[in-house]
Length: 526
Image (cartoon, rainbow, N blue to C red; front, side, top):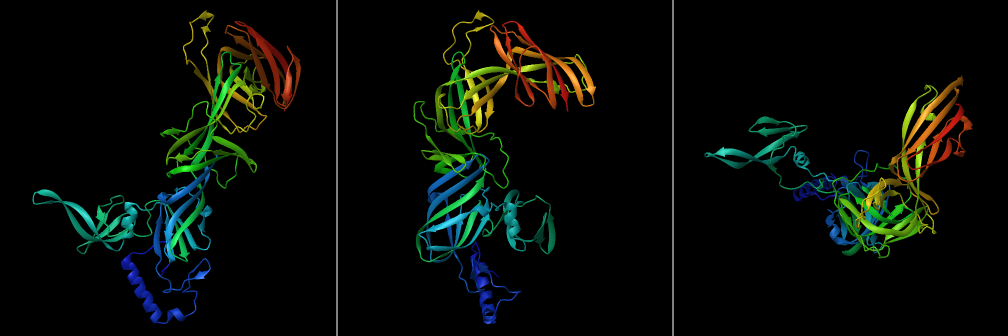
């Protein structure tokens, strides 16, 4: 019988265990060397002989004893938590139950230091998820008698009656012994019952359990560190275009998602940008049905976030404490750059490879014209810093006219949502490319004008791309033709560039209310 462990036994069980241990000692077992059949338990290098160790004292630590906490969140659903708690330990063997930790905690990442150094020695560590359920509690009393609470008709009325019955077995259903007979209850048919006490190995909430040997009685500081899932973060950008769309204001918040079920109040929050490898990175999940909090400050306030490099990554630290709710999202203002130059262009993305060599001449494909914005991440543009990945939402003013007819002055605050795109991690000096949507007034039509098979896996084709503009002003449209294999353009109606091995790029100027056409003949081998 083990007299050591992470949880205290019930008083009656402990008395019985001590009696057994005394009987074993009296029989001379304590003087025998350990054998394969009766090994001596060893915890952290210390032998604990049966009957020789006192029953450990129980200490419970909750978040109320927390003195400080630092939460470092990565953008792959992982977080590093460091916290300090002040607790009072008795002298001798102690079982410390450390509560208010997340269920997604990585048990083998937990590390504990006790201050002052040498005040207590760690002997054993375990992590227990929340296991205390009605079914688990009933199963713990298998083979014992419990008090069932039944509703019966007594004296013309319904009353609750308490009946002691013995639970013979609970294996996919219960078998009860009632007056010498056995009564079977089906799976899921859980009766109401009273239990005299809670078993020590069932936990109402996720709990870290440490077996310690305290050298003295007194207050100590527990410095715990662990990794956990279910925390994530991203940058949330907003780009507000000025009139004309040639510049805009770019602002950003740091958005932290906590779905761990544990609250971190007044935490020092740090966010790491960059892809940190982990053994099993979790998929990112949409946080539905949450309430978003905010640390939003007035627009003129300085940034609440400091940035610095951390190894091969970038570390963003919030200058003020942040409280993370058990389930929810919290934002903190980070970036505001006014008058950032914005370059708008329209792009047709298609090409000969879309049709393939087995298509027939005359095939027609209608293609959308995408709206794309470009911003330079440079100091000259008001940026020039590491921009972590996130969603960029773009807003802009309402035009004063449509179809050449005035609609009257725009109302104050009349900005509208223009579209959004995902921004990857972008280093200083890079370029932000945002695809907002499809232009309403611009349409492209691609026609396979001619097709000839020259040899197996080699053909010659002529394509015609016509872009029509139904808007009130001329527009420039970039046509990126995707080609494959070893390709050569034999003829083109206007100049083109070759930005990469699979693209031929044409620049078209499409007049207002008119159209522009480019035709080219390509020979491909693949």
